[in-house]
Length: 241
Image (cartoon, rainbow, N blue to C red; front, side, top):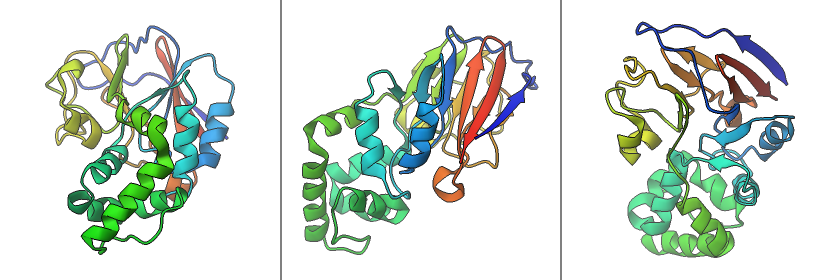
């Protein structure tokens, strides 16, 4: 585990001091890396823990990740675009199956013991895979997954998966933007004084820029899962390997 500490950085719009109502621990994209998730969750913390989404796909242990998180009522788990793709596959495998399988869904199916489908599969094969996945996941896990929120806020700290429209209040954002991002998010500072913590876009190390905090260090590809620890006026990072 690596630790790094950062003083608050000022944006072009002079962001106010970061001020959550309680201490926060915000964990980046897990993508099936149950081993790294366990290290992060087992680390000592006196903070409310929030996970930014993308628990599934690409890594090998999506089933274990989802089942563990579903059993943890003390955690706040947001929905990422990969959970969105999984649910779209369950709702309409013919229309959404190929895209999801291309971007990591094959590994998720395998983790639940489902085989025999690929992005070039027939409609019948995709429907069979969908039915098998629903059975393997079970009602409780499916209900939990569908109920995941897409935004959470404490004080002037908002947590989302992918990004937010800088010209719109967090509570007014559409789900597509929160889960998939916004073209102005990385280039335009917010003017409402809200700090936005997110994942979705891989960075070499956790990054603070213009009132945004990125905690996605590409766990499935780099073997590094990062989290931000946020207190009144301060941000520090930990990376688990």
